[in-house]
Length: 250
Image (cartoon, rainbow, N blue to C red; front, side):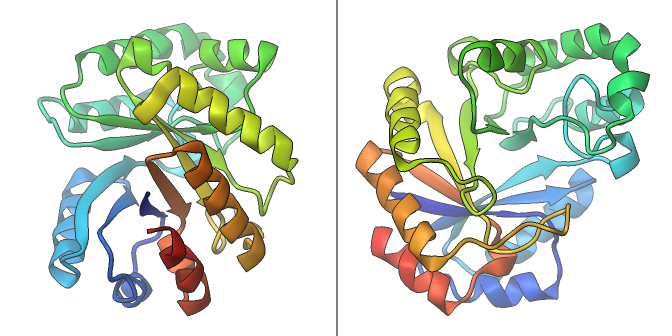
């Protein structure tokens, strides 16, 4: 099972954490601009030759939504898509409701237009698209997630799903986790991946780190379900104790 990492905040500490890794991995790196992403991508790969690939995770200013959805402020969404014109690099599309919840009201009149623009982008983009999506999806929730473009069907959009199963923040029953993993693997196969964590805080600043016990359990459940790759949030929280658990599943 391949084990990769999300990284949301690129700083000098990240390079120290990167040096802990002695197995092939991928980094999903957040950045506002493709130019600075390219600079950091080259730096990461120079620093550690175990980094096989660095995927751009485009984000926008918090006031504009931070994550990408039809509620993202129109000009910010357009800027991301403009930066990707004629590109074929792999990207992580973080499909979450906007961090600035006022946008759910102010951008509602632009929702349909933004939705069409996003659909067209997914259909035309030549590079690989990974979509980070909420883990809980059943019945009406799944239907509305699709309508709000918070989930993307790989059979329709040719993307690879990464479900954010962050058990340090949501206490999912083990039976539920097993059912969700096996169901999604059956439907999507290798186009289904899992995000695990969290190892340390994120953009909200109040995320609770996962215990060693839960990380080992979650990795084991993913491996037993036949998940081809898990992505752990985030590299900045990696330490030797977490690493000892992770290396059991490489």
